[in-house]
Amino acid sequence: MKWLNKIRIRSISVYIVQAGGCRDCALQFSMALSMNSEKKGITVTGNPKHADCLLVCGCINERSKEKIIEIYDKIPYPKAVIAVGACACSGSLFRRENSQLYAAEEVLPVNSWIRGCTPGQAEILEAIVRAMEMVKETD
Amino acid sequence: MLRAWSEKQSRSLIGKWFGYKSQDYRLLFIKASCEDGFVKLKYILEKNGYIESVDVDIPENSTIPSVVQVFPEGAQMQREIADTYPVRFVSKEEETDFEKEQNDFLLVEWGPFHPLLQEPVFFRFLAKDDVIKKAYTETGYNHRGVEVLCIGEKIPHALDMLERISSVNGFSVGLAFLLAVEKINHIIVPDKANYLRLVLNEMSFLRANLYSLSHITKCLGLLSDNSAIFKLISLFNEAASLISDDSQLKGILVPGGVKYDIENETLLQVNAILQDMVHELTSIRNRWNSTRFITERMSNIGKIDKSVARVMTGRAARSAGIAEDTRKLSSLPYHVLSYKIPVADESNCFTRTMLMFDDSLLSLSLIEQAIEIMPRGDVNAFSGLKHKGETIIREPEAFGELAICVGVDEGIVSNIKIRNSSSLNFSFLDNLMIGTDLNELPLLIASLDLDLSAMEK
Image 1 (cartoon, rainbow over the protein chains, first blue to last red):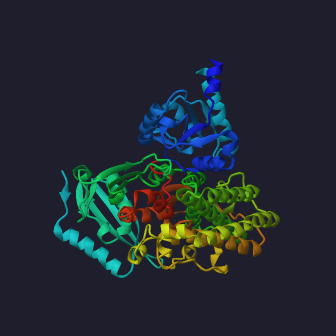
Image 2: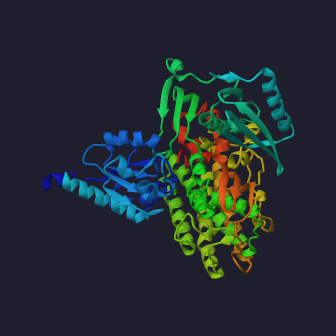
């Protein structure tokens, strides 16, 4: 169904979730977007129903976990989930026994992980494009 | 079952608070602990550097008078305690019953994950004709989780966590923590390290102010200015990359000074890159100042009375004419630099935004002055962490005053409590939102510099 995928090519809409953290990953993404968005055709949406890709930043706690799953369920297929930064990937320094923090992969099926505190701007954009390509191929 | 304090006890406590209030004391912290069936509350008050405390021991599941009726700035701290400990604070003001009143008004629930407010904050409004009539904000507990995680940790581990507490004020929190540790352990930091810390601190202020400006441009829909501000941030990142791999400047601070020496040539290069911002910032500021659409729109939003601004901190207070100089509190060598704190006459969204530009320019000027007189010598004088004690440090942060209470026992953190500027200013948000158009709400919140990172981490 390659022809169908070609028809479906359009800009990628990203929904950002700041699950609870220092917020620098989300700021890095905003900055990357403002400098390079036209190159990659990536836009931000405030409505999960319009999104293709969910960007999870920060530590996921009990409170944000439920909301993230709720948002994920609203995003139509094909959809990709990207964990941005050490907090979302592993809980970073803040994750301890009984600290009730979750890595993104424990909550959602993650397609791509961008590690580092704080990850680079170019890597975030690259990961979004790669993850969406991968998801569409398997669709 | 809740047990109420007797009328006499309540009056006595309120009387004590009023006594301190009448002598111009301000509420710095409310510390709480729970021992042997009692909740121990410690109200720490401050006036010109003098610290006093009011201690209260109450049985669990009791009700006591709310501090908000005397010190309104304590609302956020008190709410955190009420949610964490078995105690209830009683105020004369009745809470809004949104369920009951929603028949009369349009109930708008915003959050907790709105893209404009990338934090776990939940707003509920009762709005009529798109104008907010009543508002209620629900937040997480600012820094509470990180404070708990730091207890029992070694100083470097705690510092790592504190530097990641917030993207904009993390450096200031880490620095304030280190200053407290050094004070307890009688460590004398070398001159050069102090100057380097000052430069790095001002750089972190600059970064925070630039991000605040980028939020304002987004809320105003000025995409070209937003792009210009982001270019300035990338310029900042370029300068920061000469000093550290990380644009937040994490990992440079260590007990006793800074981790590594920064050559004077490198500092001059950093300064040259940063000074390129002056022209762009001034031109955007002047353009906004002379654009009627911006001045008229912003001047009508988020007006704060001088009486309210007096107990707030940062730009919210300074824009109302209160010349609060938080840099004076610092133990860094600000006293040798020449600067004037920017103030305005009336606190509204526009004046606060103009102060963002002025504060950025002030930071650039202070960086230049400090680099010009940078002394030579060692950058670290670490002599071990063997002492035990507790201290309170007040330091400037980008958005106002930061107060931190640190207890250390032979290199291990035994107690920590952080009160940033947002914990203080957030208490007034509900009232400020009343009368604001729903469309203008992001602008109001962006202009208040609320740093709500690390909520419930």
